[in-house]
Length: 397
Ligand code: NI
Image (cartoon, rainbow, N blue to C red; front, side, top):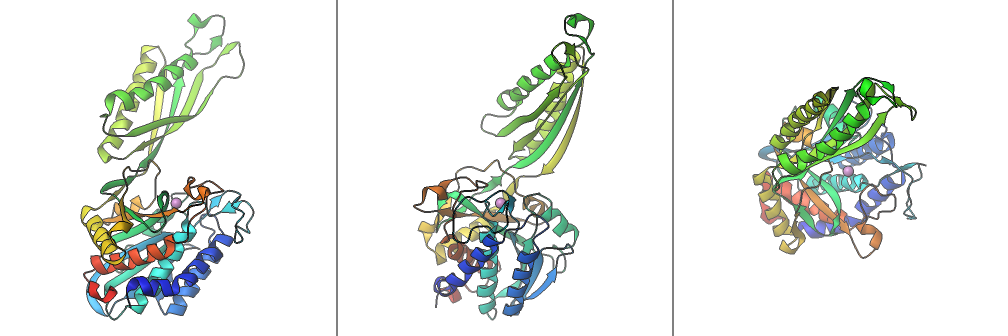
C-alpha cells in the first residue's frame, strides 16, 4: 500500500484530532488539554515522549530500525485571543479563544505523521523528534523549547515545520527557496524638546513637529536606502505627545515595528533609523533616543532541504501538488529561532477550497481551513522524512 493510501485510511482519525483541538483552543503556555491529548496519542502509539521543561508542550522521539540522521519536526499548538465566528459544528467552546492560525491543523498533521512513521519504523532510517511547541503566537515558545534542550539529546541535523496558507488550494504544498517569512523587530523613539506656551514656539523646541518629521522620513529608509528589489516595512503604530491645545510638551514618543527578509537589510534598517532620528532631532535643536529591539529573525529555508521536500512531494503526491510560493510573507514565525541553530525549512500547507471564507486571512475569526490539508500535510511530512534521512523511498510507493 502506498503512503498516500495508508494516510487516506487514517484520514478521518486525523481530522477528528483536529476538530477536537479546534473545539478546545488554548492560549500560549496554557495548552494543558492539548498537551494531554498529544501525550495520550503518542502513548497509545508506543512512541517515547517527554515534557519539554514547561507546563505545556511535548517532545516525542521515534527511533527507526535503520541507521540515519536525527530529524526534528515541529508543530505549534497554541490558539489566539479571538472570538470564533465560523459557525462550524466543532467551533471553539472556550469563549474568546480560537484556532484562527491553523495550529490545530499543524498539531493534527504532526500526530498523523507520528502514527504513519511508526507504522514504517522497520524501514525508517535514523531518529525523528516531534516537537509539539507551545506559544508560537507570543513568539516565546520556540526560545523556551531551545533553552530547555529540545535541540539536544539527540541533536537534530535538520528541522522541518509546516504552516497553513489560505492563499493556496488545499491539497497543495508550497515551498520557497530563501526567505519564507520575515523578521519582526520593534523600536521606540523618544524625542526631547523644550516645553512652553503654544503661542511662543520660538521660546521652546517643539518635539511634536520634530516627531512628525521623523515619522515621514522613516519611510525614506524603505524608499531611498533599501534596494528597490529588497523589502522592508516600517510602521509607527503608536504615537503620543502632549496633553492640551495650548502647551508645547517636553517630549514626543513613538513606537513601531520593522519587518525585513534579508539579514543584512535587517541590520541596516536599525543603523539608518538611529542616524535619521538622532540627526533630524539635532538639526531641529532637539534630541532623539532610539531603542531598537531585535525580535525574531527571518525564516530562511535551506536550499538542499527545499530540494528534498520538493522531490518527496513530487514522488508521493505528484508534481501537480507542489507549488512555488511566489513571495515571502512579512509575517514572522518563531520557527526562525530553531533555524538559527539547525538548518531546515518551513513549507506551506494550502487550505482554501470553494468556500469564500477559506481564502480569508490567517487570524481572522471567520476564516475556514479545508481539512484536505491534513492528509496532504501528513503525506508530505512522512515522505520528506524518508527523503531527507535517506530511507528507501520505494517503500512508500
Ligand atoms: Ni501561525
